[in-house]
Image (cartoon, rainbow, N blue to C red):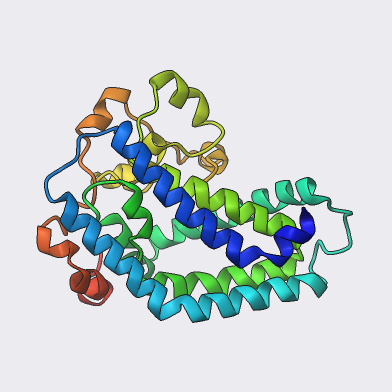
Length: 269
């Protein structure tokens, strides 16, 4: 299994990403958490268009960097490389803890550093939360994240197969937490301590800045609980919660051209 994961990373990541999106889209149709708002087709079209722009512009770069990273990991002498006899699952646990901790603080930086927030606000400007919101990210955000996370993984010297397994799980959970899927209150109440549920992450997409700057985790919620950044509202309140930002709420603000220009024409107070 380890050899299969290490030698088919690109195919696996692409397949699980597409599969997670399709699953979420179908589940939202059968078990919606919130009623669909007006302009659904317009939102979907522009979110998907932004995803296409990201794919076309950055696919070659991402594949090149990912391939280089995976290849380098095979022979890297990182901080952890060789110091601990990692198996697939022990390596997965260590990889998950380290990268989730790093991702948590990096996400907080995107909310606190003005120029990073201008980029990240494109994701938060969606006025509803569903599977297409997963795709709504500015291309520059990828350009910032890759050069930061890549060297970190190399320095750590994490096992290749464990890293690929972690990325697969993370892809599925990121798509799930952005989805408009209904979970019974009792299920959400328990599950939110293990993974980030849609209700957990919806708080992060509230237009109220108090909640926008909370619940930073997007796969596993542990560090929000540990560092006191977890917030919640009663189950019923989610049905009418205003999603998005307190600005950029006009329909035209979700057009693909405005999404691409957003970081260059606005700043947060």
